[in-house]
Image (cartoon, rainbow over all chains, first blue to last red; front, side, top):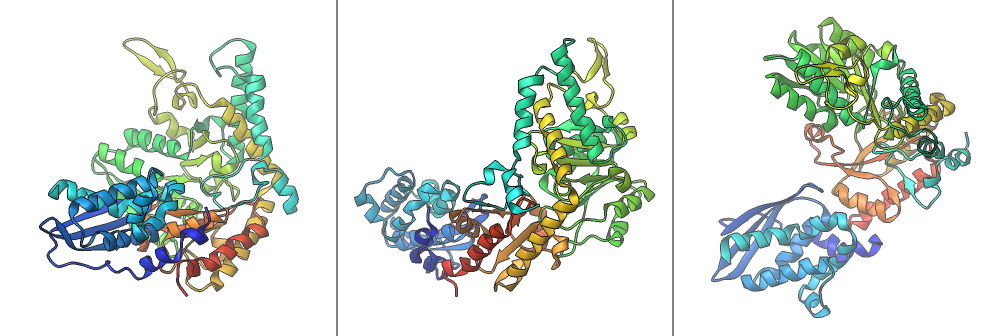
Length: 143
Length: 403
């Protein structure tokens, strides 16, 4: 695994200049996600109206992979309905397990740049932290 | 010794890696691997059970290993050495048996905050079980503990103080002999975790006057699965067994149990005699190199690495500024880059270092750093290993998109 390709510009830019890393006033849903292996700790905030994710943010700290992945995820799911967000989460999880088609991969847009994480077993938990937390919010509260 | 002579002794190192994680576990010299094979080829039977020749030779080799270990740390008698799986088991043994015998309601146990979880959690557990309180001795940001700090923390209720001789994060040697004297004046016992010290400096438990001293074999070039606990005979004799089972008794009936004498009292079940034979070989190996040579090589490498690290912007070394206070342990952070991303970049260049809290989370909380990166050296490392480490270290921030 060559890091020159893995820690690419997409990842480092999302880590350094995240668009969605900030607090949120009165979110509809807020949930903490923790990955003890890297000490990643985020709180994911969502606003949902009529089944559509209208806004989202995350706060917290962690490694570049966990932070950038959460940021890319929010880029992707804001504006989409909850069902589609679930589909995307499912695709992301399957991308890690390498059971994903090229068409599905395209739907992940920038988040597909994390595909090679499947070869880095110790970092999978970092990459899926945001997605796992999103799934939990949806499973517990919305679907 | 030249680098080439040293590297020849460690087959695993003859590949394209820079192994800088020896504080986690050391690589093994060929002679240790040969010794383990020799035990199973020539002496294997269950030690202390059979009356036949082979079992006697298994017992004999196991006891030779004990004698070697006792001599290595300068124990007065070999029965003061209990073989365990590792330092963690040794420390669990002391915490359990010492507390059962000597600790009761309202007593205190003093634990150094920089301790590895293995010298932290057992004391918490058994203190609670016996109604005692665990108190903590904090160090400075540089990892320094002073006599003054210890004197202020001890009370007439403190039954035991526990601290590592060398912390696995700072690499600084604590003044154990002085601490033991202070403790004993107060009627407090002292337990020392020697896991990070025995591979790097000569240890004399009688001179240090410690009551207990625990260490692992695997950090000392021995196989995984063998460790030791030194304890003063009079204390060990009074303490109850840790595990119960075979070969730790003199007599068992439905009504009555008489435990075996030291050291068998603390070694229930079939022991890891092959690994003990490997430990004996590892100690002989270390003695053949000599601590003068080990310390000379390790200090040179530590100086060589630290000097360059100190010149790289945004790299912060944890602990003291002086290389002689590190013993090959170089814990650091890089501004704005998470330790696991740092470790990942090192890994991609086959440089083996460790990231995380190094099983010393309370210390990281005290220092106000969630996690760190640690490169740790042994005498088998070379300037080339350090060069490789430094060249990766220099480019990490730029690889993560920082100037």
